Length: 117
Figure 1 (cartoon, rainbow, N blue to C red):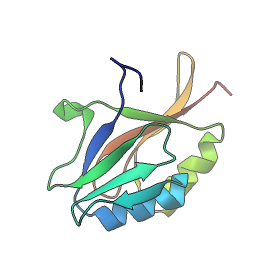
Figure 2 (cartoon, helix red, strand yellow):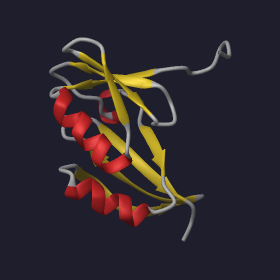
Figure 3 (cartoon, one colour):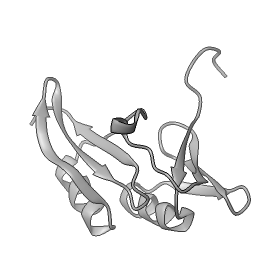
C-alpha cells in the first residue's frame, strides 16, 4: 500500500440496501457487508463504503464531489435515471470534457464525466 495517498472514501446512506441496488445496477459495483450499518463497495476504482446515516454528502454543504469516468456518458445518464437517481445537472461541456451531476437514492451528489465529444 502506498503511503500518503488517498486510500479509502466513506459516504453516508440513509438506506444501505437502496444505495447498494442502485450502484450495482448502474455501475456494476459489488458490496461486502460489515454488520447492518456498513457496506464496503468493490470494483468502483477506489475502495470505500457506505455507512448508515440520516444525512447526505453534497458539495454545497462542504463535502467533496466524487466524479466517476465513463466512455458512454449518455448511456450512464439514462441508467442513472432508470435506476432511481435524480439528475442534478444535465450533461454540459467543461474545459477537457463533458459531464453531468446526479443524486443517488440517498441524496449524495456525484458526477460522471467523459472526454470531449
